[in-house]
Length: 331
Image 1 (cartoon, rainbow, N blue to C red):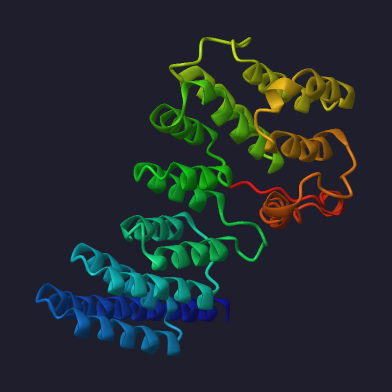
Image 2 (cartoon, rainbow, N blue to C red):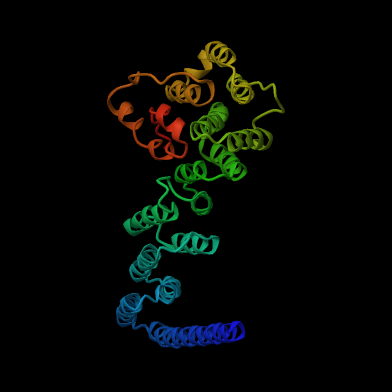
């Protein structure tokens, strides 16, 4: 009986492999025909055929085939400068991932990042694509997207010299070193010499607000070592850099008294940016047991800015989610 069952299982596996090979062969033949249409310049006809095949495959639950065909089609249209058709097929790639409930994997994240890198940076489709891709990559966790996808997006935006958007995505990755190198370039290309310390201070404080101590330390160490306008330290010539250095040490120690004295002593430096004390209020809650403020000290537009970005990252730890009620904007 056992031998018969094993033989049946082996036959079923072989049949499955043959069916898979046939399906893949069919997809390759279809791809060949579609590629020929695109090469001839029949873009509209080819685009409509891609869409027809997508919905046919999806209705047959052939999600992987649909995804692979749309991905290769998007790359083909991009290579021929057909941005609208390529963006449409890129959105269908995401639709196939969403409906198939596919597990997040590095290869899929890299494919999404590749498509993003080929989209026109100024197109509204790109904004819609990245928002949807990040939502899928979070795997329903309620977080702000997979750190690897954020890293890949940050690298593309860095190449495009879109430093502000790149910094946002680096903050939600775990690539402190990449973030630091980008910030060095950002500071030297666009910043004033008097602000070299502020570029890294903001990043460190925001990483800490996101409970990412490791990346906070790496971004500070790498930036201060590589920036041409920062002399060897610690200690540093710039008081703000000394504050950040001491803060990182204090976070490891967790002593509220040290944190309080540190913030008091460096108030002249901290007043250079009104957001610093907001970040430090948050850091005090996360690492030093400071109770959250009942109301923000800021109102109007700034108060609205403080309400959006931190909320969805706080549900990962049950006890902390009850205490961490003061969101901070990290734009």
